[in-house]
Image 1 (cartoon, rainbow, N blue to C red):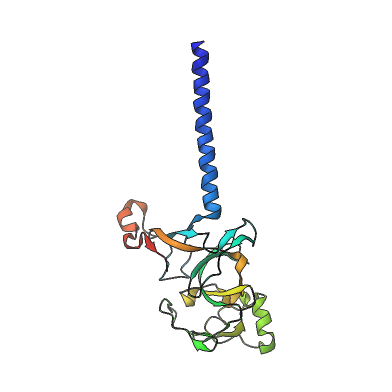
Image 2: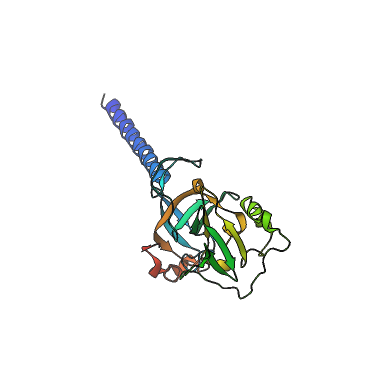
Length: 235
């Protein structure tokens, strides 16, 4: 009898342990899906605001409750604000991107000699970096009548750097925003692949919880970690 009781207790403990792990996993997935998600900066398109090797916590509730694997929200709280950094899924590569919101639907955007003009007025952008001294000319041989349509359809992805420094004017279509990276000379953004549909946006960076230099080996951990960047809020 004692042996049977001992076996029953062990089974009960094992079951409780398994149930605890399952519930912890379920809760973690709910938090990740609807509330907070970790995100690593993969490229230098947002330098020097965000660097390669920065690890962020993304607030997924700020714009609404997003239905996973869709472009729909159960609840919608608000749209991104101008100047706000957003995390989204690229409509073409299906990878996670992070850029800054520049314009909303109905806004006219133009880039002339690397300066962004919004509704005819140049933007004062203190976060922007230009690290390439070269200036690319506008896209050659494209009629003004078809410029907007070609841009919306994503055809500028194939023109190289021709719309990097001289672009537009275009009008952001309804239900979309226009996004750009702070590192303007090295950013794959709305200039190239078109407007960003609001349904692709899933959150806003909240806090930078870790940052390290990719090329520094782990045994030099003190040098690898960028200590001054840790626990900074992302603006």
